[in-house]
Length: 70
Image (cartoon, rainbow, N blue to C red; front, top):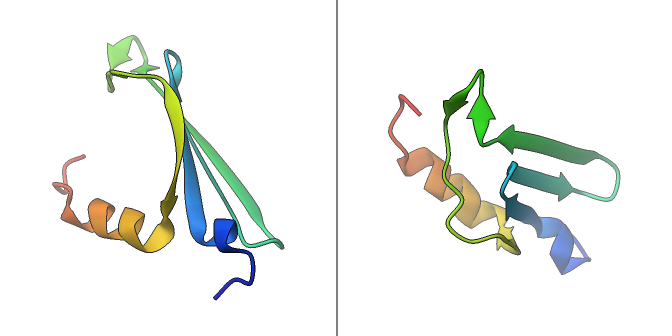
C-alpha cells in the first residue's frame, strides 16, 4: 500500500493518436502507448480526449472482464 495515494492508480491519457497508460510505485515507472492505428488498421476510436487516474484495482478488474480475443 502506497503512502502517496496517486501511486496506487493508473493514469490514462487519450488523444487522437492513441492511449497512454502510466503507472509508478516511486521506484519503477512504466509507460505504454497504444496507437489508434496499427499497420493502417484502426484498433481504437477515441470519442473524447482527456486524462483520468483510475485506481489500479478497478483497472485490473475491468481488464479481467474483457473478452480474451482483445
